[in-house]
Amino acid sequence: DQQVKQNSPSLSVQEGRISILNCDYTNSMFDYFLWYKKYPAEGPTFLISISSIKDKNEDGRFTVFLNKSAKHLSLHIVPSQPGDSAVYFCAARPNSGGSNYKLTFGKGTLLTVNP
Amino acid sequence: EPEVTQTPSHQVTQMGQEVILRCVPISNHLYFYWYRQILGQKVEFLVSFYNNEISEKSEIFDDQFSVERPDGSNFTLKIRSTKLEDSAMYFCASNPDRPSTDTQYFGPGTRLTVL
Image (cartoon, rainbow over the protein chains, first blue to last red):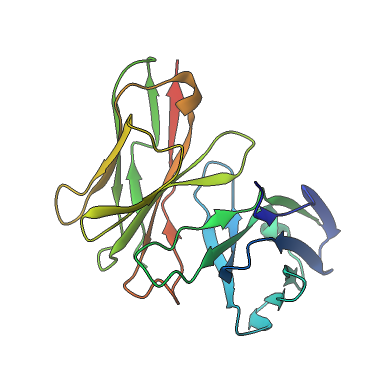
């Protein structure tokens, strides 16, 4: 049951160009979305997030776009740098209002930025 | 910057043995989680913990698993009788006291190898 889907297992871009990573979700209860970056043998590192009340959030080179009607979000990295090469995970959680805010992750997209 | 720490970084054990994975969440955080990632698969939620009790657990978190916060700083995951399929990276994560608007911060992980 893939509630969060990242359909592209890998993406390769040239340094300086835009990287666009996509994520789709099926659970309409999700209302907070996060992107994590992960290097091998390390834990996921938080990158950027967006609440369902917004459609865009920007932080430096990173912008996340949310299309609630399509249940789709994307992460844009501009300009891409070789150090951005990592696995990027999309994650989502409901605003349960209780004491659990577990994250549901996608399978990840391996981004390779070529010099 | 405060961070989640985990020990050991790598644990090798024989099938049927008990293991305890340790985590020190960020000091002012109140919500704690364990996730795992089997090689090549996505990060999966195991259990969440708040106010000294489990708030939710996944199907993976069966009777062989338990969690404990024995003191004010440590958060442990115990697997009573390890199986080969328990081999994975185990990540601890924590949330501050406003998890509806704050992200989860992950530790670097413990690689568990069951032989």
